[in-house]
Amino acid sequence: MFKSGKSIGELIRQMRKSSGLSQVQLAEKVGISYQQVQKYEKGTNQLSLSRLEQISEALGVPASVFMEVCPLVSAGQKDMGRSGLLNDEARLLMLYRRLHSGKLKHGLIEMLEAVVSISSGGKD
Image (cartoon, rainbow, N blue to C red):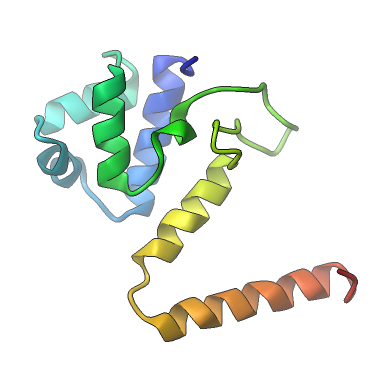
């Protein structure tokens, strides 16, 4: 089951911006006009499954990120997709995949491990 058109559109917009893409660039990757991207992001036009898959591929995320399987988890969290990822987790993964340097990827993982260790008081 899909989220409402507006929710999907808002998520597309957020992920597009996180990817550093303009509406024009996303439109070119998908093979549609930038006006159509605007309509999807505003929730004016509904998305077909095939179009949603094209957009998710262009953004480098699984289409399941856009599918609803459970209500809001808690006040500060977004919906979870069928992939089991929260929107922020999907965004983090997308940003990680944009890093081209293995050293940067390794450094980011080490930094996150240190942050988790500090936040949990050294308990794992």
